[in-house]
Length: 446
Image 1 (cartoon, rainbow, N blue to C red):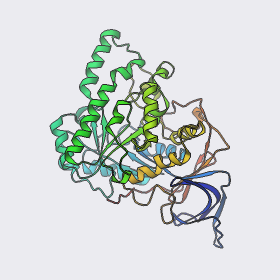
Image 2 (cartoon, rainbow, N blue to C red):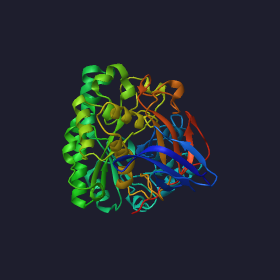
Image 3 (cartoon, rainbow, N blue to C red):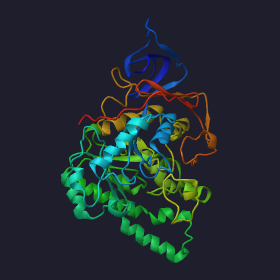
Image 4 (cartoon, rainbow, N blue to C red):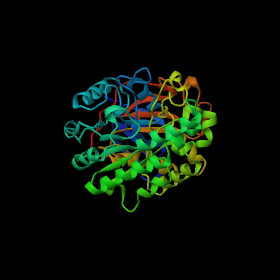
């Protein structure tokens, strides 16, 4: 049972407003929000004056690597990195080993998380070329969605045959999340790069190999199939300006059938940085032109792109320190995603209210998560306190990722994460993890 906590005089950032209010947390939930709360019961009083209180971030795309790839990361280490970054809930992808392609394998991941994860959790069921019957057994009340890799995967998890996709899009009643890159285009571009460079392809070729056209071909196919079948489609990590035309902002989020996500790295980095960062900014889809980055940012502001996530996907330094074709794609971001967006607030590119919307409110609406994502009386007390008068320097020593590196190393963020509460439990404060509890399985009001 969580303790009773009274947060005094914090600036709540919630539902488009900033207001100085008190919050009373009791039995894991927000009991009361008011200008001034006094209580005679025994509770911990926290002075939050001068600090922002935001709903905890909900990261709808992470790879925590368990089971099977735990030399890179695991649910214990990465969930702690998450709460240190203000992420109180996450949704994890099925390309672990073995792939989460049966209900039993999916349940195995939930069982591990129920003992190891300090943050709240959900896991996507994976779709392959021949597991539609297993996919259709998925419970939409307690599983976030179905994940289809329409590119950038191997073996049976690469699903790019249109007949197979038609079958899935027509039969799956719940949200389908897709990774969209056309594999044939990527294979052809890789062959061309090898003709020029041999095996020593420079990292700067990544956005040309995993090109704009590869992304658009696949994304447009997904949208076409979703419109044909009335599927609830969510396209992950948009990386090109061209793809933005596939989405619209004519409906409120809770009425949209087709939604999209932007990731921190596509909002932060651009192709000019491959020379300096190399494989440390090698993601799939690739970080592309500065004009793509700016267009994606504008699409977030225009509500053509609905949520901001991290696609946290760690690899070891040994794995990353390889030549182009041997260095895996992906990087660790979950500890610094919110801080990265708060830097953009400092720069005047986005408001803190919009950050709370895109990283907490919108994921809760989009996935229909029960009683999370907002600072509301009766909701679960998932929240993060941010200190705008402190900075946070990224050093190797400060990293909680198992992989031990970050593309942000050496950067000083303009805000600092003060503390994080999950289900009313203080899980992070004073730059330390407080192991008092495990998170809860996310439930969905569908």
